[in-house]
Length: 396
Image (tube, rainbow, N blue to C red; front, side, top):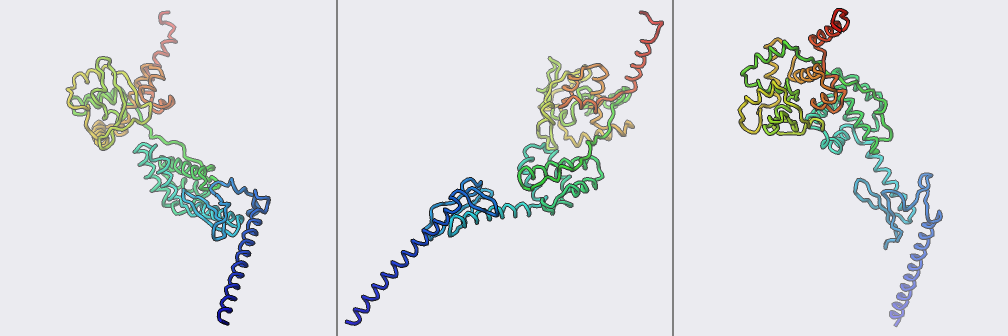
């Protein structure tokens, strides 16, 4: 009997304890809700800055309390969502902001120049640059920039450091390319919030450097054409001299690009080392130009074999023509000088600027200044005409 009374008493005590615990839980929940409604329910204070709970980019808060009595907040970085928890909305939101800022700051501080260069190339350059330009960028970066800047964090770079690296590059052309890379790469890091300031703004890049080339004289043209008469490169030399095509544009010519009836050549491709057709250097590279009489005669004589006029790789032509020019005692002449010769010839003939620019495939009118030269025979002729105008004994 006593045992039964004892068990009944225990059950009553258990029931009372459960009621007390339930009441305590309810009171805790009410207190948490009251705490979460502090600061008028619309704002919270974080490091002295008042932030809205609903308009923080990348951060969200669940206002509904979880079963475990906590609140949940989320923040997103690089497409990955992270969850944090707190005993109040205040605490959960504070943890979310701390995590968001901390990871973002950590990422900025630990990204090195080498890591960012690779990412910059993949995101912004690899699909826009021509293969040769891309190859040149990577060569310059890997030889001059990565060894000195690669391990440095982006946040550690300053203008003086960048300028010192550029100044240490002695080759003018490589210094120019390196400057272009640094300014574009670092500026993109700034505009995409990888760094807070842009040290590239104060960098002074090298001025564009161009190797001096010249046009062949009339006597040199005659000697060249005499030497290649009947040679396998004869037609190609005529294309360079009398159409002014770039080395790889000429090698990409197909017979359906030649219209003997209209006497025109249409340029729409160039070739790479694998003899694959690629786009021209620029949009203006796609052009149609007239076939001048010396070239027209050679084209009419040439038997048509296959799709292409020529089947050589660009590097082979550079090597073979270098040997040819050395044989003619023209050490300062290369294949590109034949294009300069065509441009100079057009100028000497009085062809208008706009047509010269179009036929050369230049993107800007001022490019002609680098390709057109004053030949001695042209200057002599102009002097004679000038003197003739002062000749008082000439007929009027």
